[in-house]
Amino acid sequence: MTPDDPLAPDVMHRRRVRSFVTRAGRVSNAQKNALDTWLPVYGIEFVPHVLDFAQVFRRDAPTVLEIGFGMGETTVAIAALRPDVNFLGIEVHTPGVGALLKQVAQEGLSNVRIIQHDAVEVLEQMVPDSGLAGMHIFFPDPWHKARHNKRRLVNAGFAKLVARKLAPGGYLHCATDWQPYAEQMLDVLAEEEGLTNTAADYALRANPLVHRPTTKFETRGERLGHGVWDLVLVRSP
Image 1 (cartoon, rainbow, N blue to C red):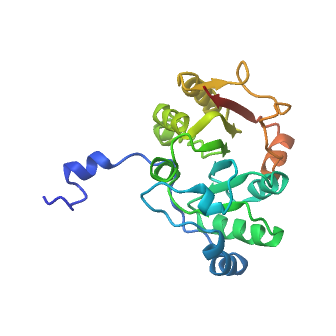
Image 2 (tube, helix red, strand yellow; image 1 turned 90 degrees about the vertical axis):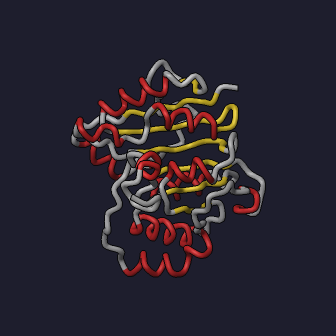
């Protein structure tokens, strides 16, 4: 067995359970055109070293990171409302990246950048400690089946990583429509001493840190009687 063998002990030690499965997905012509045209403008390649946000965004401004922006509607809406904030979106699925690029270009937004890569690796290697003003995790894959719960993004190790990357006073905003995942998030994040919940449990939409427009997905769920749970925590000083 050689060091490059995928079953070598040192390689297996480095493996971790990922919170996503990369799906091929159909890329529309519009998304492909956006990828070809705008990825060189708004995209950032994964590199194993810390980013200089001032250089990446060409200005000094607070930076908020979003993990798993889907098709990008919420990202665009928030970025348009908060032009004074930099938004760094992370998504692994190509159709979503193309969709967000298209919208960013149409809206003429200069405060959005995109990385198509594993968010945990981006946080670990590209984001400076205490470098984020906020972090958004909206409707992550809940991995419903019990045997898949280990794939959920929000766990104790992730909470500790988030606390390290947020600046003092920076916030973490999570939202899910799956109650068991909401309860797990609440329990896990409460155990991280570097984070403080802004509510007794779940945050109300009136919370000034809840910068999240209602999505079509959420509206459809509400019509069907589905609940949505928001959690907002801040990094301790």
